[in-house]
Amino acid sequence: MPGHDVLVVEDDASLNELVGAYVELAGFEYRKALDGESAVREAQQRPPRMVILDIMLPDIDGFEVCKRLKAQSITSSIPVLMLTALSQEENRRKGIACGAADYMVKPFDPDKLIDAIRQHANGRV
Image 1: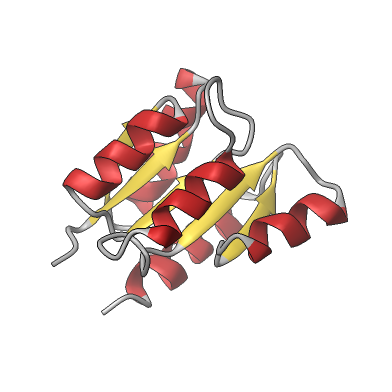
Image 2: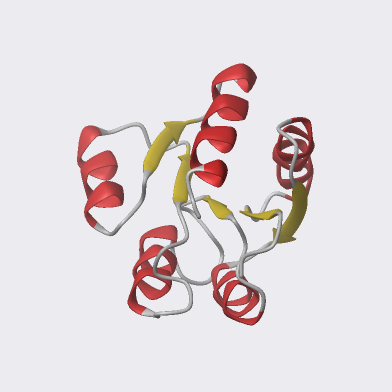
């Protein structure tokens, strides 16, 4: 059974906390991971309601994190929202192809992020 939390995967600690504040404004608990390997581990140990995932991480990129989450039965149904500075259409397509439910570009509109968090985190039963 998923918790009431959202895992934010972003290597910039201050940006991670900023996104975490929006997670809390959306009505969910905030958990953080600063790299891809720990994000996969965290999600497997305690599956969150959703994952907000940066692509450019210090170890494995967000595309690989998304593929690993979607490949494991315990995490395969968790919605992944990619939140990245990579605005090229090819990256958006690659993100959706590896299983992301949504793809948002930084800098982001806080209201749109909060709406997306509510939509995806509540869409899971």
